[in-house]
Amino acid sequence: MAMTGWMTSVLGAATAIALVQAASPAAADSVEDFYRGKTITVISTGSVGSIYDLSSRLTVKYMAKHLPGDPQTIAKVMTGAGHLVGTNHLYNIAPKDGTTLGAVGETIPLIQVLQPEKAKYDVRKFNWLGNPVINNLTIVSWHTSGVTSIQQVFDKELIIGTGGPGSTSTQNPRALNNILGTKFKIISGFPGAEIDLAMERGEVNGRGGAIWSWWQTSKPQWIAEKKINILLQIGPRRAKGLENVPLMTELARNEAERRVLALLSSSVMVGRPILAPPNVPADRVAALRAAFRAAMTDREYVAEAAKLNLDIEPTYGDELQKFVEEIASTPPELAKIAGSAIIEGHIFNCKEQVKDAKLCEGSGGE
Image 1: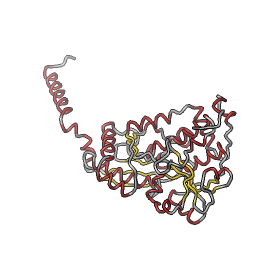
Image 2 (image 1 turned 135 degrees about the horizontal axis):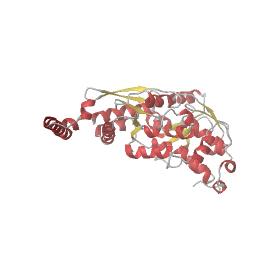
Image 3 (image 1 turned 30 degrees about the vertical axis):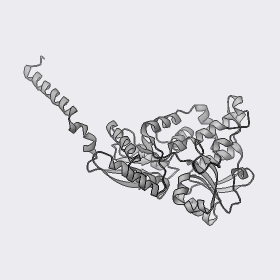
Image 4 (image 1 turned 180 degrees about the vertical axis):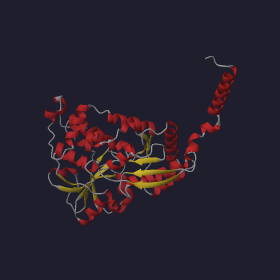
């Protein structure tokens, strides 16, 4: 049926109005309209008082300051299974409209690669907003343990407390046992801060993994009084203040071991990330990423972070998203080898597990 002149005029007018609205401030302020009067909930998958909890509360508080609409914020904690409980909730259950954010463990992308059966999520579909700091992990011994260097752990058993089975605090010392023959006796299942109490009580003689800034922030007196010995650090480079402490990758005796230990170390680059669940509208993701970037240079944020001894060396959303996707795209052979290295009691036999025997040659991992 032919379109009448009246219908043509009406549709033409409607199109003109739509074009004007698309260019108007009201449309540009759609993110502001959404967040006005809203409350943003940040769910930390680390325990109450942990570095994840402290950092996420502060970061999201200042992100909200730089978001259109001036939303309020509240913080919740959802722990369990080495950050998996909270991460699975964020992916599968949490609202996907930009009102719920997450502060997840740095090992979450790596679990998807090494233990995919445990990951009820796809890290590539999360919206990664940023990481406030790249901060190396540490393995420490208590001052009464008689162990002051990593080399001693090749000859003497060290009982260490760790988090959940999927946490880096469990996976890294287990890999060191399996690949290199260290003698860590791993007692897992501790909430993070409780491992410190267990060390003080003599229930364990060390801790399998804590971010370097955790000791600087929460236990500076332990560093000053030499209550703990930093045996090893895990990360891309030696951290400031730990120049004399070896990196985990430096213990590798050949290229195959170096690649496995480098993959296990990659989680440090993920750090203490802030993310949004999948399917959040793109304009809100862009606003959240912009708010994270603005927060990192906010003078009040910087001052509060300094009071908490929280370093600031941010990785921004786009870069972090790409890095996480690179981890998720780890070659299957490397993923298989590294996955076997974190199985309790598994002995890593390089020449049996690596296709290219040349990677098993040599004695240095530098």
